[in-house]
Each structure stands twice: as C-alpha cells, then as structure tokens.
Length: 224
Image (cartoon, helix red, strand yellow):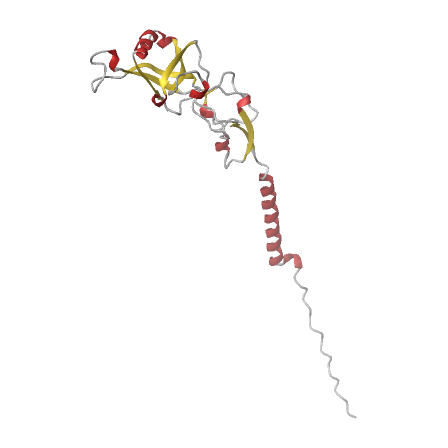
C-alpha cells in the first residue's frame, strides 16, 4: 500500500506593522514650517500698527520763535528703533509755557527735542532800523539772531570812507522781533524795516549805535 506524500501548505508571510504616520519626518517638517509662517505673519500684522504719535510743524517756524499747540500738528510715524523715536517730541505732550525754537523747523518737519529752547527772560527795548534792501539778508525774519553793523558814509567827514574806513558792529546777537517785507510797511522804496530787541546788557550801547546809524549805512548780518 502506497502512501502518498502530503505537501505542506506554505505559511503566510509575516506582516510588520507600518510606521506611524505622525512619526514621518516630512510631516514634522511641514508642521514646523506652518507654525513659523503663522508666527511671522502675526508679528508682521502686529507691527503694521506699531506707530508713535509725534509733533510736526504746521508751517515754517523760524529760529527764536515761540512754539505752542497752534503751531503743531500730530503725526503717526513708524520709527526703525525706539532710540530714533526719543529724538522727537511725542504727540499729545504739552510743551512748557514759553517754549522757543533754537533752530528753524520747516513745515511738516517732525519737531526734534534738540530744537526746543527756553523762553528768553527779561525785558527788551524794541529798536526799529531802516536798512537798505540789499544790506539785509533775505532770510532774516522774526526770530532770527543778527548783528548790526554801521559803515561810515562819505558825508560824515574826511577819512570816514574809502579803503581805510572801518565798519563798526554796534549791536551783537540781537533777536529780530519783526521784519515785514517792504510792501507791508511805509518805508521808502528800496529800504526794509527791521525791528530788533535789545536787552539790558546792550541797552547802554543804544545812544552810540543810533548816532552811528544816523550818519552811516546800516548793514545786518544773520547768525546761523
């Protein structure tokens, strides 16, 4: 009796569990990129409103002029750094009473802290000067600081004119209180009236200064 051999049935191949999807490095990298983009976007939109209010000049303000709320307009400015912002007067800040400008500030220019000065104290004598139009700089205006010179005329006597004649500075570093253009005054054509303020320190010089001006030609020079 023959016996037939029985073939063995092959066992099925073992299946290894697949790696969990959340452990896929590509997925992790993708999540990190998305998170970075979200944070960067939030900071970008947040910085869009990161402006600082500062004061700016409403119109041209000459050196030496007083400055108050009516002369200023509020601007919203985004500065590159906090240090840059501190250089300017914050909008909404009340300026000290009697504040003046140590230098000119143009219309629309942000108001620097360094341009603010204290108001001058003490009385001054208002002195009107009649000056030839070409003997005063066109830039002279209210608030300018000037020197007043007198050059002798030929009619003043021998030796008062010519190459040896010497101009004399009769007033030094006085502030202009008024400088209307020729069309706004009754001054003769070709002349310009300039009103300067003389303080107590130079008040004693006025008699000689006016006497020289009466017999000479007045020239005004502007200090920067």
